[in-house]
Amino acid sequence: MTAQLLVALPVLDDVLDGRLEAPPGLARLLGFGRIERGGGDAALAAALGQERIPAAGPRATLAAGETDTAGSAWLRVEPVHLQPDLTAVWLRQAAALDWSAPSMAPLHDALHELFDRPGLAWYPPTNGVPGRIRVAEAPQAAFVPLHAAVGRRLDETLPRGPDAARWHALINESQMIFHQFRALDDPRSAGLGLWFWGAGSVPARPDPSPVARVIVAGDRTEGEGLARWLDVDADFLSEQEPDRASNNDHEYGPEGRLHPTGTTLVEATLGADAPDRLVGLDRCVFEPAWRALRSGRLGAVRLIGSERTVGLRRWSPFAFWRRPFSAEAVR
Image 1: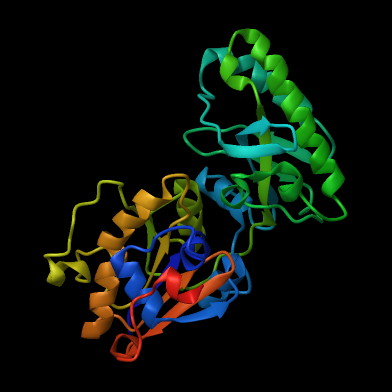
Image 2: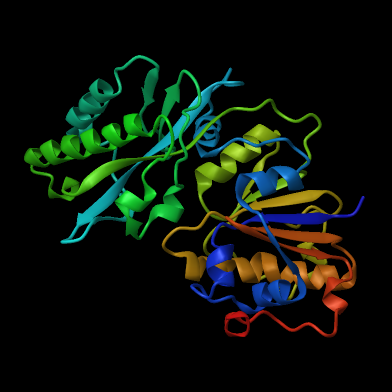
């Protein structure tokens, strides 16, 4: 069986459009690969041979170790910094809150009261896993992923669809709760609200698993949740991963990170530190993948962005008429 590599990399579109710089290894893969329309969970599911995969809400639930989740519907819930100006309210970034602090108890109580409604069940953040809401059925609304909403106007990224008004109201009410919480002498809560995204139900687990190894290189919850659904162990790529470039025999061997014969899935949902994390991924994933393609130890690579996918096959590196990717060249 020929080894293949799948990389879920939402910021791929930012690289292709020139908003992020492509490090050398990634630039080679993009330059010699074929760019196709279509990305996100639908493209990843197709690459895995599945009808669908868990969305972010179900992944968070799986990462939290919840059992008997098959068919249940969830959303992921995270606090965010919201900044108003004269023209709009902007979603600046995710807010890192210490939910376990004793001073947060009144906020926990207020949020439990907020979600004490028919068809909703609130699961607060715990052990590094973000909050979740269990719903009676998946909402008829489209939600913008947090990583895609950061830096944009709130009115451009609010939920859309028949059920959207309910979630607009909950976002507004959460802002009022955080504003009241500021009275507890915690100024960090000013301009905070909750962001809902990743709605969906937990699909049945594939049997057998189409993936031999999952490497978590970005959002830990996203990667660990996928690994649990696929029933494989998650291998966590640290931000200080050592350079393996001089150890070619080890990169794809039995001791290496990438499976020597099966499919390796790298989950790389990156945050504000995407430029630095791309450099680390280049050293540990993209450069070794390029060398393995050239040597025949890797049969295929697919990089899956939010809207586009880049695919390479065994002979792609030998397309002599192609050159490493340059954003200026495609503008």
